[in-house]
Length: 280
Ligand code: GUN
Image (cartoon, rainbow, N blue to C red; front, top):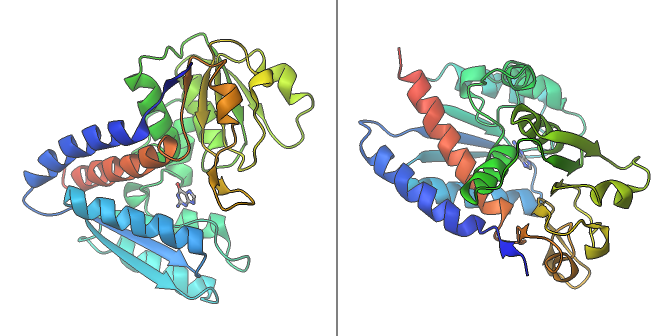
């Protein structure tokens, strides 16, 4: 039976240390989250971020715009936040409505306030193997979780399923930077099971139930990033937990695995950017 990669436990440990550090600051770090529209899932994520920030001693503000806000107005607001010295970290919740260019919005965020690590500066640093100001939250949380359980990455075959800019691409690059042999699979990949059967580490970030025990190599490590509600309204991940946990050596649950680690990384990143902006 696989060992559970317990994201909640690690979150609580990391955030307790972070709170102690933040308590020693003269001023509060401030995170601003911009949410466009009223997607219920996004609203829950954003409110969870605010709650955690409060617990750690980070000031946070949620700016909620209607889904028909113009791209120009959103870009204006980001410019204002870039120039506001009381704001240290900016997050624009994705996805955005279709009439707004995600890349334009991301590119408008100052790299030093880019708490997601998504701007061309930070992404470029990451992909060239250099150090960005901060690493994207979910990938960073995944590596914190693997490291906590002393899971070796160097020389291992890591299979990443999903190639989004939020998770798949940056986590693949971070694993590569740690000397894993990385395969990235996606919706056009043929014979997925042939590839997953050779994986030492699987990171699945698809949002569909695609991984079953019979697709796994014995003692592999599974990180399940997917989260969605099934037809009965139950929260599920990409991985069939019952069959997979019999084969794998470690597995992250949904909920309680990667989700808490993403929020943890967001808090860590906010504090890192706060310190960066207080350096000079
Ligand atoms: N939507 C889903 N995950 C994320 C994330 O990590 N950052 C942002 N900005 N939007 C998201």
